[in-house]
Image 1: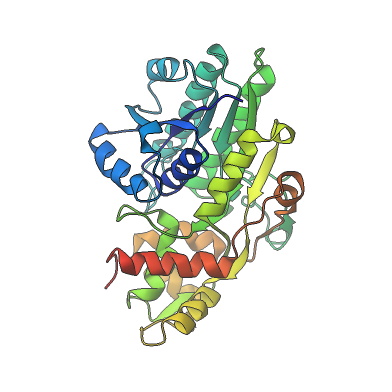
Image 2: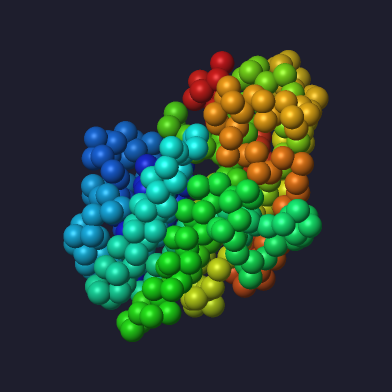
Length: 341
């Protein structure tokens, strides 16, 4: 089995955890960054969790640069394509997200096809599955067979549309491609778990906002959550397993309401000011005009979109860390790093 992996977005929350697990499994990893100035800091972070950073190298690459991917995929066995623009607030123009997400995955796939890469594992999102639904459909349990309807703008955000458009473009490319290139996609829910550095994943805000004393109450919102370490494991299983070729997998460990997240944290940190009440929906909408980071979650107010992750368990013997442990390990790391006092 080939041992050389090109990993895009190595400095991100999921990217760095995936690099650690690949290195610990003796893979050679080439991690891409938008700015090489991050390379030393991210290498030192990874070195705290792997003794094999001699097998780690870095390359500067922009998702929309077609030439660089042709160079970077030469001699590569597998690609873990994790990089995708993920904003903390809604962009002014949705093309700021959609174009780099779609063009990026197509640039990577074209180069991988040309250079004989065995398999690309694309990190998509449950955002490409559970949105764009009518009110009656939102309470369904969703599987890998479902897709977000990007034409329903009331029940989607630019980010969810970008992930859906990019993943669909990738499958369209694979259907038309005449090479032996294989692809698997993994669609994680809200990713929690241990943060490795102060430049953390956006989903960690779920825990931060419950612990930093800024919220008197929590919105009536819930998500399927998953530990970052479990997603990294699933990405590698999707890369290694012959059964995973051409398949789509949901990466979730279970559904948690924000109130349940707060309760888990309150039990673990009884002396911290953690919200116990819930905000009325109209208040959340009002606050979103002040705190722009709330805008992307408004489509989830008062809804429970649940996911069935049994396919990954059955096909790949994947056993995700519990949602409670994902929350607690996230909280512990946030305090250790001083992200909140």
